[in-house]
Each structure stands twice: as structure tokens, then as C-alpha cells.
Length: 73
Image 1 (cartoon, rainbow, N blue to C red):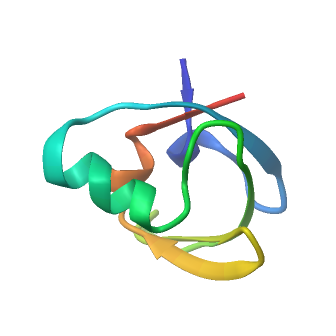
Image 2 (tube, rainbow, N blue to C red; image 1 turned 90 degrees about the horizontal axis):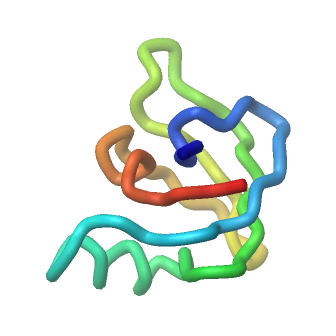
């Protein structure tokens, strides 16, 4: 299982599944990260947290813990 945290910089990945439950999963979905959407990884901070991505035409910063909940291919 590959997660968004494992994706390399300047790589485009596609969301397969969202893990987590309740409010955390809802918050990720509210940010526009849903099944089937493509995510472009723009930058990763030196210590790996946060990850800066482009989703649906806008920039978004995700914590490492949130990026681990997004399964990609």
C-alpha cells in the first residue's frame, strides 16, 4: 500500500482510498481529496512535515499524519 506520504516530489498520483474515520476523514474530503482525484506533489519540507500538494487546481499543505491516510497509486 502506497500512501501520499510516500510519493516523491514532482510526482502526480491518483487517490485510491481514504483511510481514517469520522471527523478526520471528513476534513480530508472537505479539502477536495476524494477517490479518483489526481494529486501533484509540489514540495516536502526538510523534515517531511508538511507536504505541499496541488489538488483540483489549488495548493494545499497536509500534515504527514494526514498524508498517511490517503492511499494512492
